Image (tube, rainbow, N blue to C red; front, side):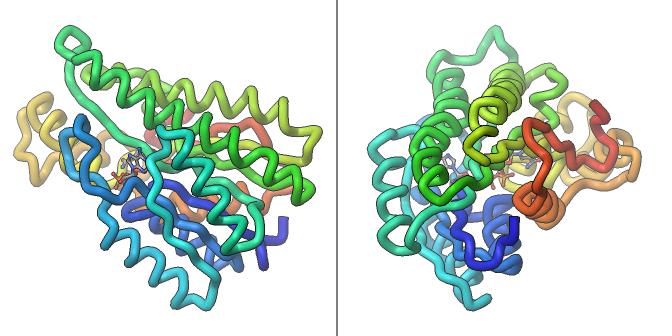
Length: 271
Ligand code: NAI
């Protein structure tokens, strides 16, 4: 698909991977709606989420590239927020061709001590959020004659890990939903793919996984990321948000790829 003049929505775009995808799509010629919960906390997640100031920075960077942009505060777990988000995009950018469902959270800890509220929240954001965004986007993509959905899953959705049962299960669900939607939406010329990022030094890694891995491997927290990726990946390096943006743009351009879960992990997960 030629991306020039297309309209894309990126959720979880205040920072990290979502910000890089939004900027990458703008570089590729898209007008971009950037959405995020943008209120630092949701009452359950134990690290700070993206802020409205960070979302404004993302929007500013998209506009600097000469593309249309609208910044929207929306919680992807709330159907009314999601519907309002879609209506705002139609009003301000004229329609929708690409959905990048990137918003996600992580919770770490053993199953035996995970609270029901933590389990529910992780599934609410990572799984229900993807469903609600797709449900609202599909009629809009159909109205434009087709489009793309890219769901940001994780290598954690391909192999389960101790201390991450809720997160891994939620990302496995995203991969499965991607396959179902790819078959369902193929006749409508909508390609649906997942991306499985590997290991990135964004908030969710530094705030949650670094302490977990440091305890597991008895390594100082400020050294654990580099040591982990050297051991875990063939290429001996972590990934960057720009690596994930590059893969997202490939999946948006690709004419004949649907239903896959594309791993971008430097060889950290080869299935
Ligand atoms: P991040 O925490 O920097 O960004 C996630 C964004 O999602 C934040 O701006 C946050 O405010 C937003 N968000 C959270 N709950 C939301 C909600 N209910 N509604 C709307 N927005 C919400 O983390 P990062 O690393 O950029 O994560 C992006 C995606 O990549 C996530 O789906 C994550 O699971 C996935 N991922 C990240 C990896 C990593 O190593 N950092 C590896 C594999 C996957």
